[in-house]
Amino acid sequence: MGEGGAKTNGVPVHMWFYDNHDCKVSGQGEPLGEWGFNPLLDQALKTTHIEFYLQVVDNCANLAPRSEVLTVVFDNACTAGQFTNITFRYSR
Image (cartoon, rainbow, N blue to C red; front, side, top):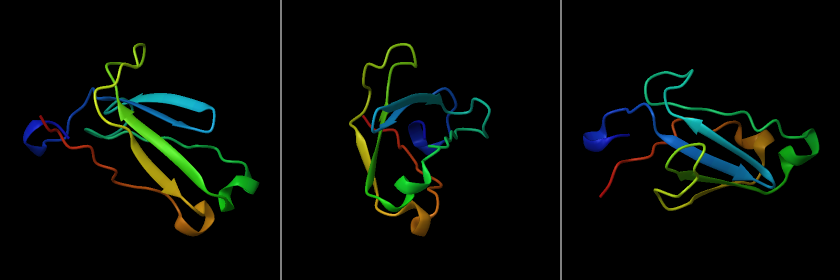
């Protein structure tokens, strides 16, 4: 979310787990201020402990950090389902 809590397009987010890295920009191919990804986990990994890491960055070509790293712990994807509405809030 942008300043004042408004949904904001154009925010690049670097995400990674294991050796898989990706970068998404809010609002690109998604509703206002949103982004998403499908980790395409192997069936055997869906019942294991996985940690996803997310960080707002300068842009997808330059992953210089603009936020602290958010760690999302996923202990059993088959039981937990999917994450929705992960919200980054603007702060100074």
